[in-house]
Length: 244
Ligand code: ATP
Ligand code: MG
Image: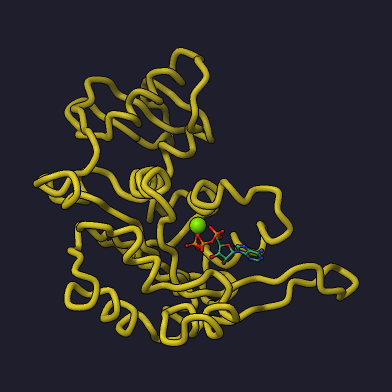
């Protein structure tokens, strides 16, 4: 497959899409017939705080950040914890990133309705965020869908949500490597030998993203890394009952 064919993007059907029973409509809008793109990976995820924080790392510290985490973890749209899910999908094909961003439309649902009626986010809503005194301090945008913004974000996000084993090998867009060492996670720490209650991240023989293994090796040596341990661990902790 040539490089252009291999362009990939991450899509999340967010909790408001599930709540409003729009998943079928969204998948139809994104289907090969409409987008010309192919499915490379898909999973149902109960988003935990670690994954939410890593996914929205660029927004850390902003006024709407906490509200954004409540949104993506599903607690804003569902009282019942078991219903809090997103659908995570990797789409692949020429110009995948731009094509999906175009079908999704502008971030702000009001702008979407005005500038691009018919796009997915034109069906979204704006929700006021209030402080303890009830004053509106910001707005949350419930815009139904996430779509990677550029190739660097797409790579970061796909590797955050999907391990190589979640994607057919012939559709791997990023380099993989077979791990030869055991690495685990215990209470937010990286460990190199199993302990009671620890979670295995990599075992010898596992196929992993090469960049993840490079990061984990540096972390094990106490060296500086661009991504944190939680960025690497998050996808291996997806749907793990031990992680809140
Ligand atoms: P997404 O990353 O979800 O595809 P986007 O790339 O169009 O959306 P980002 O700037 O990455 O927009 O923002 C991520 C999400 O954070 C948005 O989808 C929206 O829900 C929320 N958000 C972004 N900017 C604001 C803002 N100024 N006020 C409130 N919420 C915001
Ligand atoms: Mg974004």
